[in-house]
Length: 65
Image (tube, rainbow, N blue to C red; front, top):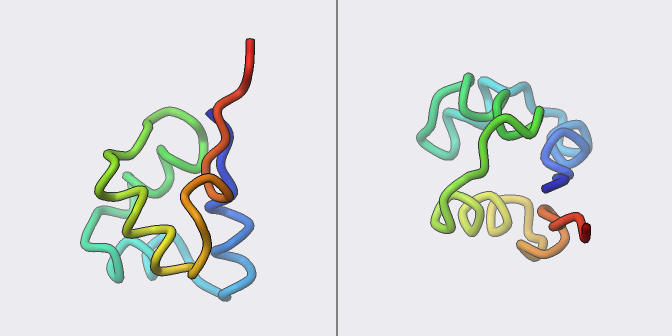
């Protein structure tokens, strides 16, 4: 699954630590999501989308095989 978390973080001038604090998760969680090593829960994906004021579908894209 691809994601645009890093792009949105840059647009909002946030570090991984900044975003993690605002979402109530660890910086390592943000790092793992950005590097496609971890898929967030539905709840966290929705929180991220709401924080950036975008849709979940925009932030996360399932790569078709």
